[in-house]
Length: 314
Image 1 (cartoon, rainbow, N blue to C red):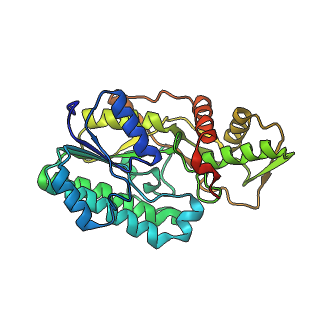
Image 2: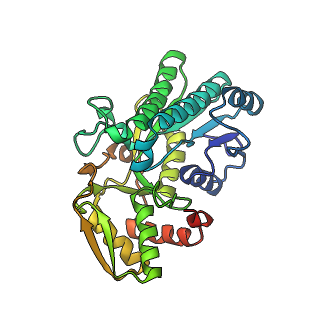
Image 3: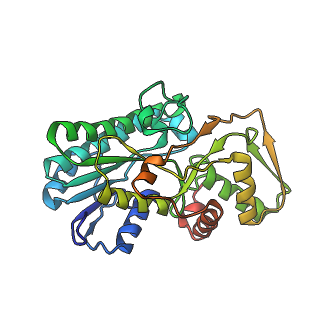
């Protein structure tokens, strides 16, 4: 168990996941949280990361920093996604190990699993067949990070763990019109359609793919829970175990935002993978389950969007 006054470094504390972990730690009474902005510490700079760890010597590390983006961003910048993610995670994990960090938790992504993995996806299906090409670079970097944690455990007896979240949403999400994920993109589109009085909104594909969504504060709750209750080489899936079609999701977002126009579909545009659901029985067997239902979470996210200074950026 982490001591309440232990020095805890949250890498990526300004991002959606990192900021949720900080909120959760503070809520649970942890008082010694170390943060560094990108300006203060560039995690891709090996010398700077080594210096930071030598000086601060955190007891625990949550590695939630990453270069992220949706389909467009991932497929346009494959080399950047691979390099930045690979370098920053290796720098942090290696420096944590060199400086005697008691425990590290690495945050991955469900895109690490094979494109045609049996559904729902168990932790054990990792590396059993090929990855989805559109985010292969990101997935390879994340797989390397979690494998490095596993190999340190095996070679040096460390206690480093990894968590693989499903699609996340919530406060501090990215609402960029081109580089955001499906749920924040829908929130923005329906908000703008409502403001502009548009009679209809057209969405990509036919709305049939099934997706799972987890409110980011639930993930943060699980992350702290695992840091205190789990050790092992295998990753732990983080999700709700529930799925919804993109069509149902779209209608739910429109309802929460109060958009009453028509929703049309453009079947000439790609649908993406037909189904992506995580098997969450492992987390459940450890005694953890999610708390926030999707409609409530979307409502909270929309409130955040309305107060989010980033959303004005085009």
